[in-house]
Length: 583
Image (cartoon, rainbow, N blue to C red; front, side):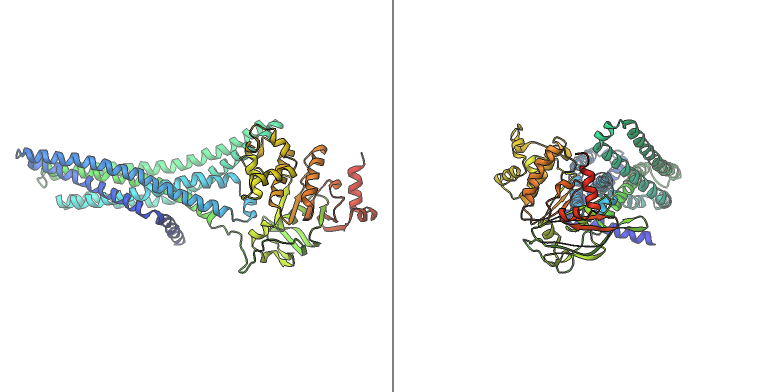
């Protein structure tokens, strides 16, 4: 009962995607209806030719019937063109609507969703699953409608020939339907299992291709191939189970359709033998049953498509039903924030299995507007997590964070993030030009403003040496640039955005000393006059911070200026001396 309710809900949602394209869909269905009528009319003309026109030597009527049949075939060809071309266009437009809606929804999902779901799995749902959905969207209604009209029409016409013979033939139809329903559950599970494994193998391929340089560097090709082969075997096994269930289903359905043909030949032959029908009616009956068998086979074939499409649509709906980032009922959208940040007894943890894993507990701190505060300490203390909480990439569990005295949950996410610039250690560049990647800081920026930002980030001189200059493609994830070059493009983004609040999360830790010094100059200029939160392991980069907070997994260990912390002989001094002991 519950499954039926879920299926009705999914069907209602699926039908909703036809509404913007209802005109084309109606044209498609009208073409299918006309084709069904023509298919039913052809056996009737055959009966008339055999029973009337030929025996009575009615040449004009015979030629006229031939002309009608030829005209039907021409019209039917035109109808098939409309049905196949525009029917597919309806499907691909629906696919575009779903993909657009899914992509837009992904932009609104919380970061926690992407922490828990693999990129390859999400890509599989957007490509493979939606392809199967669009195939169902086009062929499903069209084939079901055409088949239903043909079957009903064939029964009506056959009943006018001989009702008893028609009932004998159609007695097998409910039996076919019952067998199909009984096998439905196994088919559903087999197709769903295959979808899961296919998404996983796509995720592994995406991960392996992205990490190709790492696997080559560690001579891990054999390990990657072994890992892929294990997933590949799972895919083969899942597909094999699906095809076995599908094979049993088709074998049984084909037996029934063949038996249907056998039944009409035997029953029709007996009726003809005993004089219940004449030769023309017998020939028409065989043609009508042949016409009947075609839609029955179509319904059997479309059942696979229904399983594939419905499974794909369910997985599409699974993502669409994920809760997006939420806003409070009344939020403000300040254009420009001053940048005073206050943490008040902030508590936060990540979901980890059955329990919430606490990362930050009772953290309090104040960052005055325009000042620089550095977070240092061993890994695992929650420094990067604190940075993620300010732009609300994650929601805090307790306490509150305020900017300019206002709880950040009372500020719209768009306005909040519009006032924050982030430069991270792991720079992500999109597959596009240098200019396009810098322009992420401000899509309305002019070429002059982009160039000015690049100069401030110390990347302009390098860009001018490239043959295509700012139109140079950086490759996937910026693979054509060095680490320092990517970092400077990221800094140029931040300069172009010109935010009042700046977060520098290990922005120079992966760079060599010479490059670090060059980029540090750019970061110092970028930080000037802004509220800046710096996460760093290299303590030399935070000596000039207005305040340094030492964080461990137990919370705030100590805080103060560089000189104050050195004089206390605490953890900061120990870390600092350890980093410089060999200099």
